[in-house]
Length: 181
Image 1 (cartoon, helix red, strand yellow):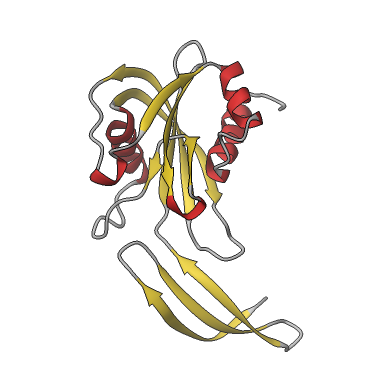
Image 2 (cartoon, helix red, strand yellow):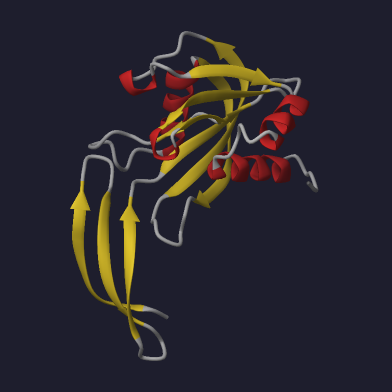
């Protein structure tokens, strides 16, 4: 097992921190790990009775492009420790305006555990009713669509869905349905 020898924060803002850890490996050799710490977040798969999925599209600054993904997000600072289900319902309502009568927890995925501590709690939202979105200022350019299963596959094949958490969440959905791929 790798042991942390020392740790120091090298950067912090309102959304994340970065630390550098000096480590010792089981064979005694030493090394360094850079770790991005961000709070866990919730991702919601809104699914209609006919199997259609609701997606949102927004500009993602780090990759300089607009992509489709499932609604997702984390609490602002100060809300840490709130139940993931509460966060999932809030993100669904904020980004799409949808409310779900039934929410099912599908599991957790780690976003990039080679360098980040962040995890993603995945929920399936069903029995949906539409209301007005309650988007934050940073989501003002967000768009929404309803994609039938064939349209979902086309968006993935065409590179319009590349978000790792969205793709992993779809795998959890497939397993939940008893699918084999």
